[in-house]
Image (cartoon, rainbow, N blue to C red; front, side):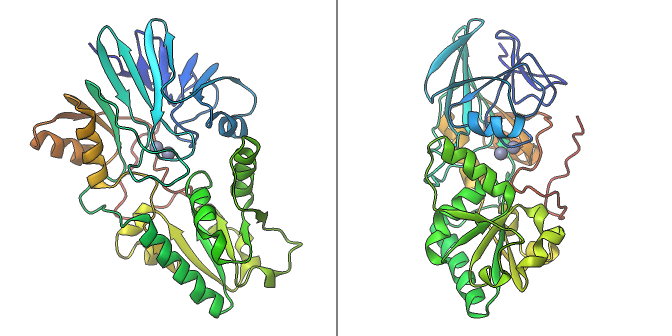
Length: 344
Ligand SMILES: [Zn+2]
Ligand SMILES: [Zn+2]
């Protein structure tokens, strides 16, 4: 029995008559997390985790939202549904479905390393696991986050000595909060782009605590930025916005920076392979922990990853979805990224 079917609107549960992260407007949408390729505008009703709700309100405005906690069970047309931490960004959840003795889990995006703010990834036993595979190639193996943060701190200290602004480019939901959390103590002040500022405000209003940040503005003398840290989404680097930070050193925080040369190709000064997604060993460990007899791999290197699982004796197939590369907010093309051939 299949609890999820891929349709032109998204991942559909026919027994429960709802979609998970639909890419077209539907009646009932279950949302794994608030990244824009998973949480799209136009559906009639949204169901998500409590911590995702303020982020959906920020991004999608007023709508019919219902939120639940992790491990809380509800029924949708007889299908038992619960959310479980995915460890990707604040509020990110795996969706567990149970019907007629059959259990399916849709992972959404996930990372297996606990970042201290997104909830710790929880393996959920199931018959079928629909997994992301953004970094589903053996070359993607992360250093532990403390090691990466140490090298970012060293880079900031070098910039301070040279009286340059340290500008880190990172997704405004997820990576930016990790950076604020982990780096606020090594500068006098953290300045942020408006997109990062608004996300932090929404989270603080919902009860999350972060070190204080100030929005970059024309009123602030540019000397204030030197010796300090600025955090912005990737798209800001290509806009005139960046001029007020000069002289500036630019670092990108992204799993794609694992590949040598990608920082240079992006024309930035430093690359830090800090990711909000599972790396190759993380994906394999997550799949095995579910005990699933069937695995469906989606956005990323789904062909390579499902081929590997089949070779290991785990039945796997790839499915086509319209999720994007949400490791970075800007659209950038480097040779090592999977082609996004979904235009739905
Ligand atoms: Zn995501
Ligand atoms: Zn995604």
